Amino acid sequence: MILEFQGAARTVTGSMHLLHVNGSNVLLDCGLYQGKRSEANDRNRNFPFDPKSIDALVLSHAHIDHSGNIPQLVKKGFHGLIYCTPATRDLCEIMLLDSGHIQEKDTEFMNKKLLRNHEPPIEPLYLPADVTEALKLFRPVPYNTEFDVVKNVRATYVDAGHILGSASVRVTIQENGTTKTLGFSGDLGPQNLPIVRDPDFMGNVESVIFESTYGGVDHEPFDSKAEQLRADIQKTVDRGGKIIVPAFSVGRTQDLVFALHTLFDSGQLPRIPIFVDSPLAVNATDIFKKHPECFDQETYSHIMKNHDPFGLNQLTYIRSVEESKRLNDRQGPCMIIAASGMCEAGRILHHLANSIGDERNTILIVGYQAEHTLGKRLVDKEEQVRIFGSVYQRKAEVIVHNSFSAHADGSGLLRYISKYDKNQLQKIYLVHGEYERQMAMFDGLKKQGNSAVEIPVKGQKFDF
Image (tube, rainbow, N blue to C red; front, top):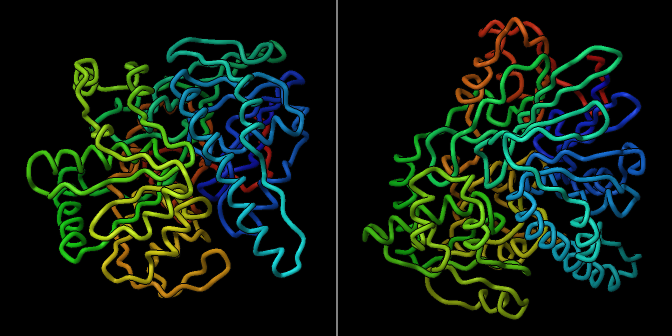
């Protein structure tokens, strides 16, 4: 039994781990890598294994850094089954089609520039048609239901409390007369946030692949951040600016809109127009209604009474390029939410190019930004940034709200690991974190008495 780490190793993107057992190959996640453009392009186009050799894929959740390269995996010869929760399947249909459209439109835009410079055109990673083919291989499995992955490998999903349908995975493996248990945390959510349920403990395992995004860092309480959000939005409204939010239309967007909806309804903020700008913009309310298994009781009761707890019906969904361009000419305060969340592709780049030079505007960051991405350069408040190859002077204010992160903070991650029986847990593999955060997590785990902790590098293999 060999574990091979090929993504999210000492970085937060491109989640992809490979399990070799009984002559079969099982892939855990297949995400897009986001970072330095040349490196990201190479890693996303070239798998470190033959896709035809993969027998099954076990997917933790729908975020693009975990699911985003599935269409290319299928395009290059994978024909096995893709296991996920029912809500993850429904979100992947939206998010992967959205990603396919982004690949297509960004490539068209860049090829026009390349043609003018007499340079060869580029090909998109995949197209919406490739997504449609991939979706045929999805097999939804409910939480807490054991299922066969390949021969002598069984798995169970438990709620990770991260986004709708997110899961941690407990894997039971039989090989050469022995039984081993492996856990994969996926991305863990924080405790006591509105909308989705808190993470469930997966149960004891002998080895666990564990995320470390916010190792050593604690979030501010959600309630105190609501007041800060109110003040930041009010400040932008008072100066007549726009609020640009890099994020997909499902995921942490719901947490942000939930908070804004509450502030609007209580009269603490003047209501402003909110636009979700996506080629496949969909009101996610119907998907949310289909999956009551993912919600805390309060949110579930609101949904079943046909209330709109997220304020999703008060958003304006932008589909066409023409509608999107008209937002550039819009006068007065508004909020524009557009993908991608790390500002590496999609319509968010056009909105940033149009808005970044106006000091009245605010760029609101609500998700983790990986190293070497435009989003990270904005978080670092660089005065000049490059968008579509051109340099822009940043005058817009950048505000970061980590309380809207769908990830558990450092203390939350350590609390989760403390639930494992140390007499059974033989190895912890830290993934999905920048190295500095992983070292902080490593130190915290050592203080807890966890002796065997690894921080794999890309391509590293472990026999367990």
